[in-house]
Length: 428
Length: 146
Image: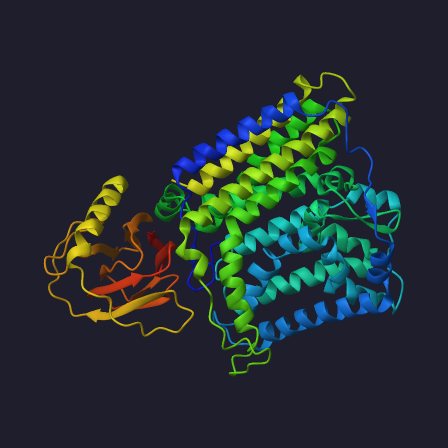
């Protein structure tokens, strides 16, 4: 993350040691071809299944549980809205850490561990339901229209958020974050009032992101009942909205762009250029998303035409691995700082949650080698899981034909992503 | 140039261990991972070569020479390697009123037009830290603290 001027995101991880880059690339290659040659020959995860948990289902579906979760989430957002509209325009305002760290980075571990909790607690959904109590959607869309829309509006919304985070000047000032918040509420909530609540699943960048990541969680709802499942089977069998592939490629592109902007070459180039840096930022961001997305589209088409969204499940572990490698220390450091600042949203010396006296524990940074090892592990494990999902999905896509050769495009692509990600973390 | 910087600073780090002064007691809030020393008086407006860490004769610490002129920064986003807790000096000259911000330890150094300042700092937590100017916003140096 790059928020100029102020404290947030001001300390970043050291570049990955070069030996780690070589080691990671070698591991990725070995794992990939081992999976290709040694792994199963018939699809293993073509149907959903796992351990049914009817009592857990009743608990999470109970009205009071839902109401409590929604109320807690709504309360948290309302608290942060207080900081956004009435707090001080300083870096000690918790809103910046809330938006850029708790929401954007925190939704990844939350969704991997707890599944679709983001959708269940989305405050815009709660508000949309309150609004719906006043009347039906103004222009409801047909099932067919919703299928065509998929999560494509969410791709634009994700790019919008990335632009705010990585390109927008003065994104650490309240005025800028207020305008973006208004834009977010108007497009997502307004669309829900007009077209129906499904618009939120299609367009809210946080929910679109969280729902993609949640297919890696061990909790899957099968025929209405929550099951404890193998996360890989979950990812392979989860329903796939139209545009899922572009969501994954956009997320990878955003993280890649974030790394790329830290390279001395890019910084030097933009700073000496006579063109405005917002232009370079916009071109760089879109270019990086295309650089990730175009090869994926080609590799998926080479596997089987029209299957790109269904093959995109294999990118989700890579998205999670990259996110962990890039943002784990930010989440640890700024996540703590935000918790401390949350006690005093208006800068009046409050200590509402008793966190204001806490100090930020920076202990993990005494071990930069351990941080580098975690980064490497996250990327390599993400790659391994991605390759396994891709293998199984490809077997389904290929229908028993050319099972080895047919998998090559996806495999080469994934090795390419992993090596590129490692090189960017090493960022010369 | 960059690899030269890396080698030079690493050598200096080795040499500096013997004679570097103790870091002054920290006066920062508990959330700051680093410590800072007060601004040292300007000894001379000497013409040190740009972006070259040079050993200040009396101190034996890494010096990063920063020149802000015509809306450009020198160095221009280069990397400098440091050890944890190692003192280093920012030797800053500017042709306009500006602030130089060391991220991570949240140290703002105000500098007036035509002024020259030497500020000694150290960072106790490993990581990559940006040193930026604010008028205009430019990334001057990335500090790699190992």
